[in-house]
Amino acid sequence: MANIVLITGSVFGTATITSDEIETALTEAGHKVIRPDPPSLDSLTDEASSWLVVCTSSTGNGDLPDDLVPLYTGLVNDYPKIIHLSYVVVALGDSSYENFCGGGLTMDAALADLGARRASEPLKIDALETTEPEEIAPAWVVDVVTSNDA
Image (cartoon, rainbow, N blue to C red; front, side, top):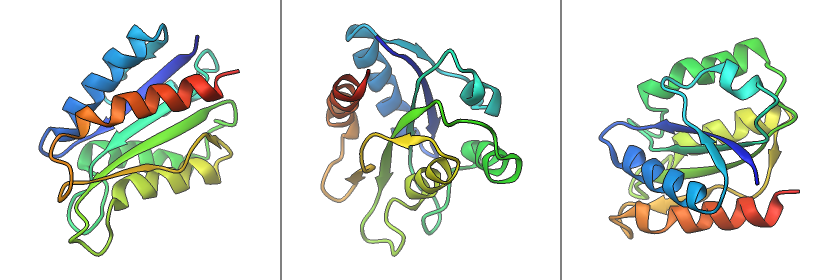
């Protein structure tokens, strides 16, 4: 089973609730989950972990939540070695905004640019269609991790 770092970016708590459920589902599937608070570059560069799960909402017009900005800034400025990581992104957003799921897509692009291995396209959950992303995301994450874990 995998050692997984789970990081969350949340403004109003929906991504935190979703991450709580993702953590529970991954643990029940036999994976070890580390959930640093606040998220740090050190947690991503630790080669004991082979997976990263990012669950984030967007704020403003597709911006990252404030709690993920320091991590993102570190990623794009410090170029940490994270090529050992496979990752998935759960992006929460509202399709009535021009930059739908922009926070999650921003994190996805930064991780891919640094050589982490994307295991799946980001799961984009639209608040206009789904009011409880915690009902969808955990099973999807477990399925992706389990089917891609070597």
